[in-house]
Amino acid sequence: DAMVIQNPRYQVTQFGKPVTLSCSQTLNHNVMYWYQQKSSQAPKLLFHYYDKDFNNEADTPDNFQSRRPNTSFCFLDIRSPGLGDAAMYLCATSRVPADSYNEQFFGPGTRLTVL
Amino acid sequence: AQTVTQSQPEMSVQEAETVTLSCTYDTSESDYYLFWYKQPPSRQMILVIRQEAYKQQNATENRFSVNFQKAAKSFSLKISDSQLGDAAMYFCAYRFKGRRALTFGSGTRLQVQP
Image 1 (cartoon, helix red, strand yellow):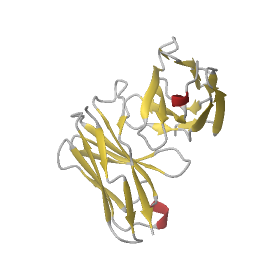
Image 2 (cartoon, rainbow over the protein chains, first blue to last red):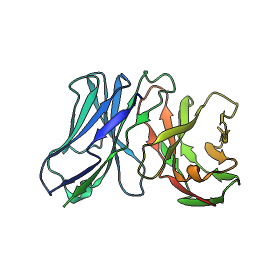
Image 3 (cartoon, each protein chain N blue to C red):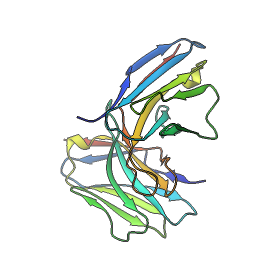
Image 4 (tube, one colour):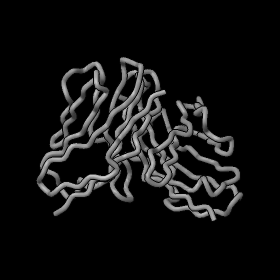
């Protein structure tokens, strides 16, 4: 089945130690998103790629970076994780530009713990 | 800035009964989309139902329907004949036409009692 895959599902890192989260998709969608979801809160968009065009949200800290080497893969890099970065990180994709429903398909998320 | 408010952090419903989850939003835009997403425990978020702002008719998907009141900026979700599998966190979301990002509400955790 076509899907959005996130690896790993659980990630533990140490304070200040760089970490990379991975997302892949078999849907061939041209848009990929990264959301941060803290406990009992709404998912918050960090940034998204439309093909190779990177779109950063204004309030996303510089500590968060992203790479999209090809259509299928997108990575979230946290350069120096702090305790406040512990959260669920959701990857999502969508197929069409913004003038339609543009349904987003979500992966299962990676839960990041920072020690 | 657009905001989405879900005023019910938790709701409970008996199996086979009907429950309504509330959502209000604030926007100055006239053309936008509204969504309800379901996030089961430890599983991915999936789309339940969607509505275009310019469509007067309320969307329906099987047991799920919405009550869209554009003037009141209200978008509630009604779940009929509730099933145990409906237990999940439900997020209301807004997207302005022309922008790809979703703005989510804080969610409502729905429990279904057997």
